Length: 125
Image 1 (cartoon, helix red, strand yellow):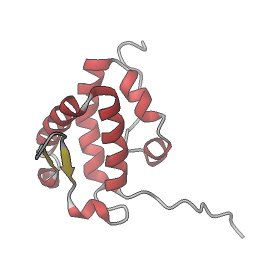
Image 2 (image 1 turned 180 degrees about the horizontal axis):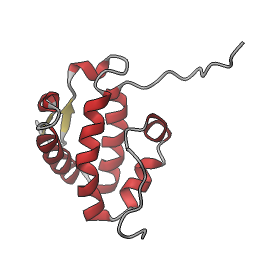
Image 3 (image 1 turned 60 degrees about the vertical axis):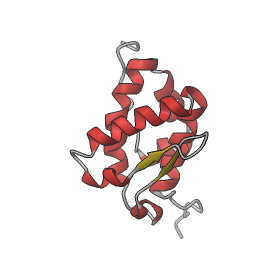
Image 4 (image 1 turned 120 degrees about the vertical axis):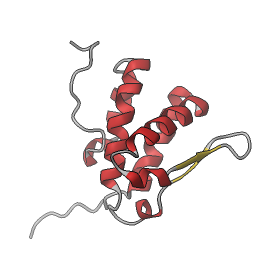
């Protein structure tokens, strides 16, 4: 009998939440909201469903609403990958490899591959 992994795959919404919370810890909510909103706007050209990602500030803190499909199983994973591919250069420009390394240390983000390949940045070369 094969040894099955008891840990279910996180939803796309859960992966986005992990990424968002870590970015807020490092950059603050305003910078995170600005960068993610900008990346989503540009990534929506490739993946139009990203237009459904809403980032708003109804009171004191920024909030997000993910596309409804991100709440079910592995739906929307491709859109999140496109978003991260668009966000990554912005993060590297601002922080060098620091934030990408930190995100890569989150097991769920690393295991699911949403961060893409961990190719060297300019600072690593």
